[in-house]
Amino acid sequence: MNLSQLKKAFEPLAEIGSLRKNIEVFGLSLTLRTLTAREDAEIQKSLALLREDEDTTTMEYLDLFRKEALSRAIIRVGDFNLDREYIETGETLADGTPVKVKKIEAVSDILDDLSRSVANELFTQLTDLTSEAEDAVSKLVPQRKDLEEEKKVLEARIAEINQAQNMEESDELAKGMTKKVSEYSEALQDMDK
Figure 1 (tube, rainbow, N blue to C red):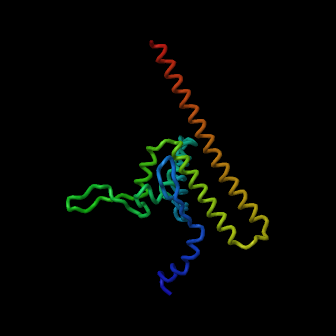
Figure 2 (figure 1 turned 180 degrees about the vertical axis):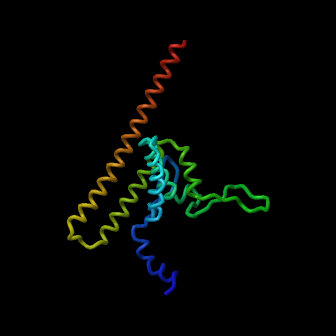
Figure 3 (figure 1 turned 90 degrees about the horizontal axis):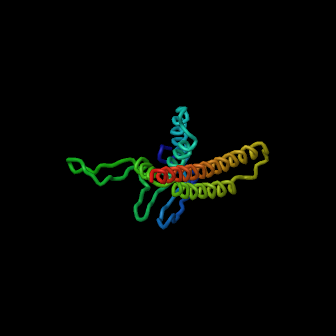
């Protein structure tokens, strides 16, 4: 058996829980896919680097998590297929070779310019897709008799839900702070008149 045969043998397992979903967000058609274990590990590494910085806020941490996940999960926007490692920038080198960038970096840069509410909606859609994949996989697993293992699975899911709630609460806090700053600015402008 060679490596390509081994990979072929594992393909059915790799496809379990690997879902794609066409969605429409604020009138824009997109396709999302679930992340692989390798992609999850990449995201965890980037988050670990951010955690080392003591000045990192919760909002920055959540924004990075959301951006890293979405930059990997978005594989189509409108008619543009992004299910590839590199995408062309539209520029060419002197010899005519198209300039390319990593798709993850390109999408990540674009996500930086989106409003938090749009990013939240996209992330909510990805979270829903991930839950669908987890449900599908759990139906394939034989009934567990180990209650401790089942308890760990449920605790992990509770932690995910708590993280999602914290993200929503942080977003609401940010909206409130933005409103207060705006009101304060307006009050200062009124005082100048």
